Amino acid sequence: MRIPLNPPFVKGGCSRVQESVKGAEITSILLHACCGPCSTFVVNRLQEQGLEVSAFWYNPNVHPFREHQHRLETMELLARAIDLPLVIDEGYDMLKYFQAVVGRESDRCPDCYRLRLSRTAEVAHQRGFDAFTTTLLISPYQNHDLIRVIGEESGEERGVEFHYEDFRPGFREGHRISRELGLYHQGYCGCVYSEWERYGKVKI
Ligand code: SF4
Image (cartoon, rainbow, N blue to C red; front, side, top):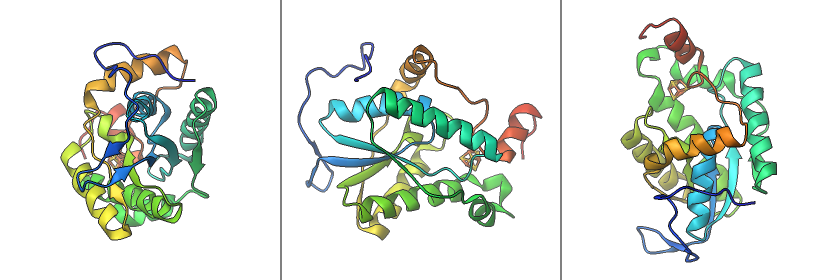
């Protein structure tokens, strides 16, 4: 099932494959999915460009564990609803997340991006995808430019291309679609720090 998009985001009848900045043809792409709601628009946008999209779940930054499971179940629900192949990373690397950010709590997001994008690049390479990207690029709340830099570095390290695209114009549309589908919307970014900042109204 394809999700109907409202104008002006419908690109209309596009069936070409994407050409990367390096000029190579990209047909298959592994999409790191931070959550179901952010995936709706991005999946559609990539499919509109003729790409074969598979989603990848790796978010050890989401706490506590039951919240992680709830978001994962939401992603699985979406994947089933739209026939989207979904690769789920085994386990829950919460300790790895904390090992990466403890001591740098006020500047933790770069390490969080790196953890997730590096793993996505690794799996994309192992499974023979032409490229990878992330739904984090749709969020107006994330550090967009930094995600791009870390994505490109991770791709270079693993020998697989990072597909950069500014999905932010589709943020509202994506959330409209996900509400229509009845998906769960989380109230904070993911980590315990972000939960405290959101509900404790503090800035770490
Ligand atoms: S605020 Fe979000 S992006 Fe930043 S470290 Fe926490 S979960 Fe990761």
